[in-house]
Image 1 (spheres, rainbow, N blue to C red):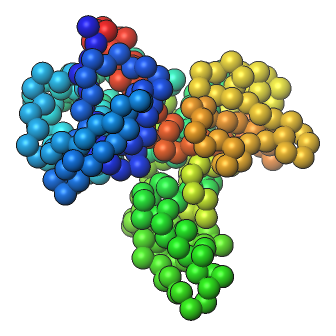
Image 2 (cartoon, rainbow, N blue to C red):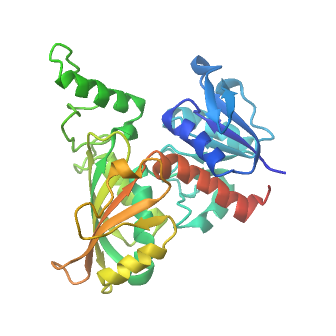
Length: 340
């Protein structure tokens, strides 16, 4: 007997990817339902070789359903997630609403799979921010070996992290550069994104950091170790899919770059592509559609006693969102629900 799974927000980029990954990974589901807002009622979405018609989220009864994968943003989640949880359906939420709630586990299965066992307080599990998810997959095995003191990370985040509107704006502005009569001023982003980079993701906070940067700090501490110091600069770049990160790590103990490379090669969810030659590294274009978090450019930082630099790339719609949510569901099934 398998699970009954609801995908909430099935017509969005992440919701569609959740359905794709459930099918690709052959998640043991006896029944899958695609839910969306009333204005999307009846929209067809793909699930493997099947086509599902979306049902109305507002009228849906979650009683008798095992798992709900949410991809609808914080405002709508605030309304519907408690409803699903109260009906006995375990919610795996991709929004930021519950990430910092002490009663809700924040899970990256390669890093802290045991945390799913704390889901029962609210019947909700949170999915981390896309930029955090790929980073902690790379950091955790190194932390286990040499204990990380401090992380300095600069991100290069694709427009798909801002949803369909972000993708459309990059596409439209890129075309308009070559057609001056078709001006496309910024709408989703604060400045032109085509042929540009914008050091601003989410809202500004009182200390000058953006909320995206704050998320990386808070989530890394919750997922790996509250003692780790993190400082981040998050930048939107004109790439459609795939987030990249330049990460500088300071350890308590010395860790040789060759040993670090060997550790990461054996780490779950990590693929090391690190040759010191032209093209011997991974870029966002190459990671699209892949499950792995790719690590390249591993090298010693000679400016501090115990430092390493590395380059980290991942498909943000997959590991940063949909894949991680499905992996949480798999982990929940294996460690707690044990069905299917």
